[in-house]
Length: 148
Image: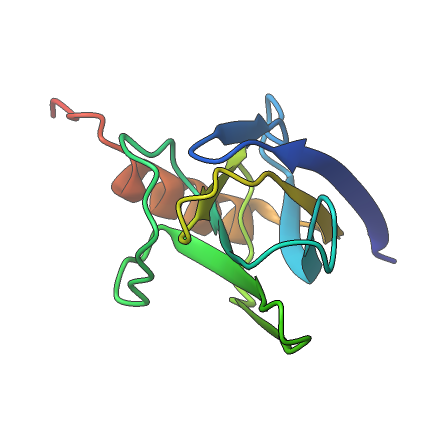
């Protein structure tokens, strides 16, 4: 039986935060179930907020989305214009991972607005084969040089 855990917080423009998930044995996997974002002061200013979830620490936090990047697990775009129109797009992968994840935020309007986020993860018990596959994927996505 799976369990759902949630995380919420606020990120400043250009900020990156680590969500601690890894365990010593790696037998617990996670899958994104829900991902939502909203402006700190909804409806008061023009904003274009981009929040992304990655499997690895990012060297830069930017306002670009690249779905060919296999380290990207999900993204949420929240936009509001003073005319009253609101747009929100949320896309996330169904991939199972067993290591820490990183969430980044950028305000593409240059207004330096923070964002509130909410993430629900489904916990999944991994057998030894699934554990090995998830761990190897995480190693492959890291910037660590392996010496064999």
